[in-house]
Each structure stands twice: as C-alpha cells, then as structure tokens.
Image 1: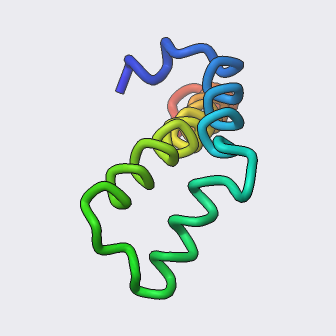
Image 2: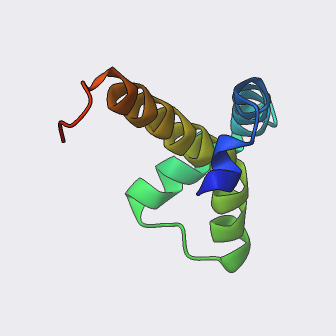
Length: 82
C-alpha cells in the first residue's frame, strides 16, 4: 500500500471532487448510480463500471486519509508500546 502513500493528497481531493461531481448537470453520475443501486436498478455492466470509475478516487482518498491517521497515531505512541 506504499503506492497510496506516494499519491499527493491534493491530487486525490481534486480527483474526488472532479470525478464525483461530473457531469454537473442534470445530476452527478455518482449520485445517480447510488440511487439506482439503492433502488435495485443498477444491473447494466456499463452502469456498474460507471459507478466504479466515478467512485474510485473517493475510495482512494478515504484509504489515504485512514493511512495518514494510522501513521500519525503510530508516531504518537511512546517507544516500546504497542
């Protein structure tokens, strides 16, 4: 997972905002696909791929933030403790 640590945080924030909100009108794809998923209508392979493509940056951002927090908590521990 070291490759996630090497991705700049700013890039992931921009990619998450851009891909998460595209297209801006009439509504973002991610929102549309999540609504389809909740309604049980997300069955076409293209729709599933679209959801994965638009949500990947958000998932990577969440993983990076989680890893940053874990690394900071590990750095705050006194030596010899677990």
